[in-house]
Length: 407
Image (tube, rainbow, N blue to C red):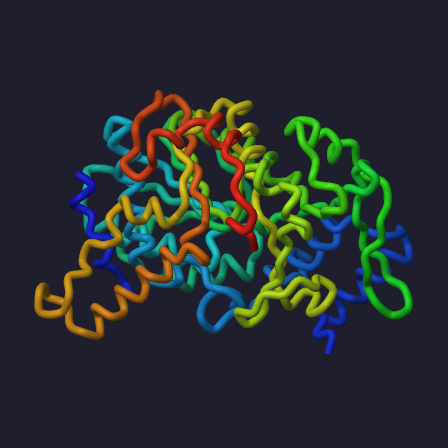
């Protein structure tokens, strides 16, 4: 049945925000130094001045960074193929609930729905986008306007969704790496936190004791610490999100795309400076205190911790692989017959080839990790995931050499 889905056939100064800078300065003056998670939450999600909450278009060739759906509609087509396999494993139900959290510009939803619509399968695809920010929701609705097969609803949060007996798939693409993180360091064998202070007309780091015992418990659960003198990021929101997502699935799958690594690699002694990166106009930087509210902030996801959080919430780890591995197995090479061997014009062939190269690039989008978890589905073998990687144990026992998956 998967072969009936053609993924290639689809629609085609400091620079800070002054108002946000003032909010942060006043807050530090009143409360003292902020955790980096508090700073990052304001920089990205302040209701009026945050990076993601304003009307500016952030994603795409004309934005600050590119995500896989924006490269070419084939990405959405291949995700649709994976969704069809999930539907088949669920026994081909009459309806399947698709929940996308953090849908960006709405491009992935558009291309997935277009591909599924053309497949004309005997199933109703009920698509819900989780998006609390009006500006982002408006962009998504604009992208999806007039989409023939779009049966899309919006909700502010996973918790706002009513329980449903319908089999469910929860999908996220580069969502968890944009959740606010705490910055920590190991000094003299002890865990310390890196706060944000404001003095002498500038924001800067300030070291102090951990703001919450949760940070120490995080590493105790992993049985490791970053190396002496190393800094790292701790995303306390990602495992909480995983628990919320699991609660939405009575029977079905979670499909998570994100930059990240198992904990053993993410917190390895050779990773001296953590993974925090800033993006503006497709250039990466490491200074979060410039262009506050006007640049993206991101940090790699600890897949060990989120897989464990899923397990504790009733999910079974079914697959873990790179995007390059998964898209190749799903058939990204199809439709790339050389000009003269198929029906493609030269220009169309070159566009498809360039898209495939970009999506599979091991130094770029190809190194995104994909985690599949299931509930009430047994332990099926998935076409796109190597059987040896389909366990939580495999994730926990896969440290990687220096340089691999480095930001």
